[in-house]
Length: 326
Image (cartoon, rainbow, N blue to C red; front, top):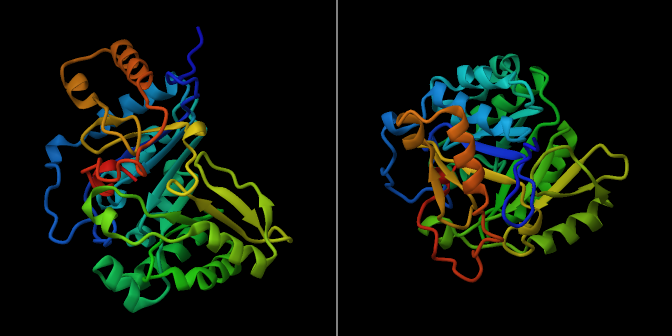
C-alpha cells in the first residue's frame, strides 16, 4: 500500500511541526500582544503519550521530518522526555527543535542524547537593550550561552532565525551575518507575518532588497542547506557561511509546501494562513484506534488549501504565532 501522505493538490506532506506548549518565557512584540494571558490550560495540551501516538501515525503515513516548536518548547517540563520518546521512531529521519535559546544551556546535551539532530534558535538582535525591547526580557546573555552550549554538544549546523522588523532591527542584517558566518551558524532572515494583531502591527521589511545588499557585500552564490523548510539559500564562495531567506509575504512558496502543524492543544492546522483544522485531541480521548487516527489525518490533509491569504486577507487569522506552533 502507498502510505505517502498527499494533499488535494498533489503535494507530498513529509514534514510535521508539533507544538509542545503555547507558553513562552519571552514576549516578542510581533508574536504576543502586550498583556496576553489567553493560554490553553495544561490539561488541554496533548500528553506525552498522545504526542507519541500522533507522531507515530504521521510517520506511518510517510512523514519523515518532525520539528518540536512552541511557544517555547523547553519551558515544558517533559520536553526532553517527549523528544526521547519520538526521536528513534522507525521511519523518522529527522527530529529537530526550534527554541528561543533561553533554556538551551541546561538542555543542549540532553536534547542531543534524546535524538534531536538539529536546532533552530530565534535571535532577532545582538544588541542587549534592543533584545530587551523586542522580547520584554533581558535574556540575551542566556541565549548566547545556550548557543555556545549547543555548539559544544555537537549540534551543527545551528540555524539562527532572525525576524526582520522595519525601524527596529533591519540595520543589523550585516552584523548578524558576520556573527553567524564567524561561528559556523546558518542565518535565516524571515518576513514578519500578519498572525494576530501583534503580527499585523509589525512593520515589514523588503527582504529581497536585504538579499541583494548582502549578496553584493559578501559575494554570495546560490547554495543548499539540509532541512525541510522553505528557505532559499545563498552561501559564501568558500562555503563557510550560508544565509537563507524565508519570504511568505513577498515571494510565497505555497506551491511547494510540504508541511502541516499541530498546536499544543492538538489541532492539526493545515495551513499557517488558514483556519481549517482537525481536532486530534478529541479523537484521541474518544478512544480512536491507530487506524482511525491515520484515516482522519489522511482525510484532513486532503483539505489543505492551495495557498495562504496573508496578502489578500491580512486580518483573517486571529490566533497569534505562539498559539499556532512555530
